[in-house]
Image (cartoon, rainbow, N blue to C red):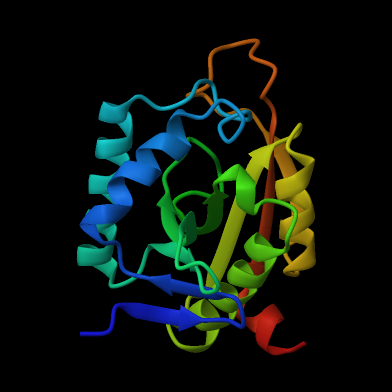
Length: 183
């Protein structure tokens, strides 16, 4: 059975495999990768997140796809969709997101994969709207959001982040299916 959902010139976006969990846990524990999170993930937190990803696939038929570099066949992280349920006026919404291990940064992989996901989400899944958000400090992710055509929206405070934390506020980006298809 083929587990690939989307293929780009350099990436496979696919279903998760059991062997992805160990590099996923290492990546989530890396303070460089997790710089814009309150703290790196423990192995337990990674397992909880992995279970949430699996649950969303079962419930919706799509989710955060495991990203694999074609040239090396290495697990790189994830790119795909997630149901955001923040305490914000735009939620719940389908979020497009990515997290790649730092050896894969700066090569355009996040943009390449996110563009493929966005097209798939609007054309095949018929998602009405996609959102994304990040801390105001994460300029790399903001650039990806802009490169894939999302429009910058408002800033908001994430109530799950401790008061006064330097990662607040977050910046919201969005794009509707109608806007995407009219380009």
